[in-house]
Image (cartoon, rainbow, N blue to C red; front, side):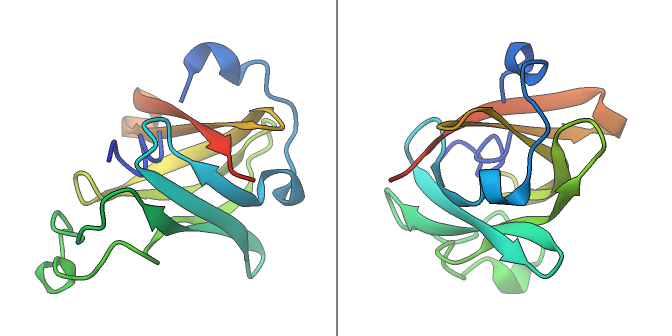
Length: 137
């Protein structure tokens, strides 16, 4: 699975085309770009969150920084949390990447009704990883 962040990460050239997003626009089920996982994005309190709801090959959270969590199944794990409008037409929050066990500042923006641009960044946005997710029926 390419990170649920990079199975959270997305296409730099398309970010400028994204318009202001609402939680209702982005809520739904999204498949990562390599087809290895599906993330369900839904309201959680005043924000949006996303959980893994399907994996092509079930696996554990073996790269988690907390050794006690390394044996848990990734199914149901929250990989997106606290997403709210960031004032630039995107939603911003935190994205957990099971590929490396780290959490990144992440933005979500629709490129179209069927394509979600996901960007995970470190160092205040100096280094980012992009991914394009497609809406599941």
